[in-house]
Structures are given as C-alpha cells and as structure tokens.
Image (tube, rainbow, N blue to C red; front, side, top):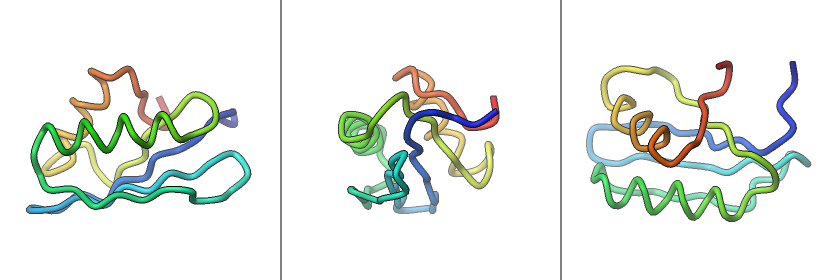
Length: 84
C-alpha cells in the first residue's frame, strides 16, 4: 500500500543526524542537520512535519544503535515508521 503523505528520511550518526523531508510530489523542500541531542532531534522533526504535505512517516536505516532514540522521539510525536 502506498503512503499518501510525506516522508522524513533520517541518516543517524554518533554526533549528528541528517534529516530530509520528501513531499508527495518528490521534492525535498527542507533538510536539517542536528546534533545527537533530544531537543535538537525533536525540534527538527517538528519543523519537518510542519513543512510537509500530508501525514508524515519516518524512514531510517535501522531501528537500533543511534537510530533508536530518533525512533522513540518520533513515536512520542505521533510520527509513524514507514512500513508499519
């Protein structure tokens, strides 16, 4: 089933995370690079969710390691994981 909203792709790293918003039309209107701090991750996710069109889903390379905290924060914000 295809998702009818936007996606937030996240590349997680030890010190920084890179997040990119992908809208339904395939455009990437916003990108963020944030430090590995809860407040920075939360702020970036809120910013990208607000800028997107439709219900956002998050796409990560893993559910473990550095990605785990991003998944937890996204879940707290009500952002679902792609494929769930």
